[in-house]
Image 1 (cartoon, rainbow, N blue to C red):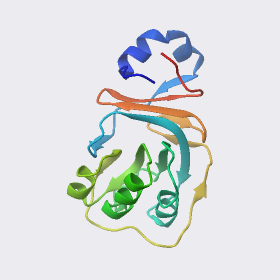
Image 2 (image 1 turned 30 degrees about the vertical axis):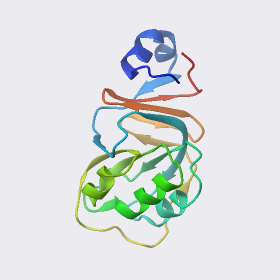
Image 3 (image 1 turned 30 degrees about the horizontal axis):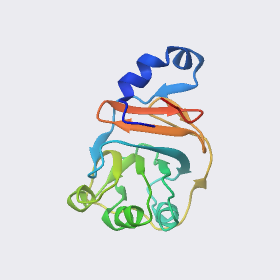
Length: 166
């Protein structure tokens, strides 16, 4: 998609919003990383206070994808830190959206990748490897499925059933 804002996408696609094919996430996320604008096909992950599966995904080649992590909205620990974000940047992930907390914020903010999360938190996550890969998740009032498309900028985050063309 060319450089078009999420607001412009919403204005131009009223019918997709009405049908539910285009959804906006509730504005609950903080912006991290050096790439405030990013988009790509979605890979979903569902975990709770555990980051093993997140690390495993980000060690793979991203190919411009966006990892969407439903961390259950936990504010008790960070499930994403600086090292995995550096790995994601190096493996060409477009972005990461976390329904949970991050840590190592200065390191994340130095990375050329888009990251959204609820808040920073200094405590680390568990390492049990428990979670579900590529399953539908519901975060910020929106159901998100593996293979859908995510578009993020400083106005917010949109999810579309299909890739949007301008």
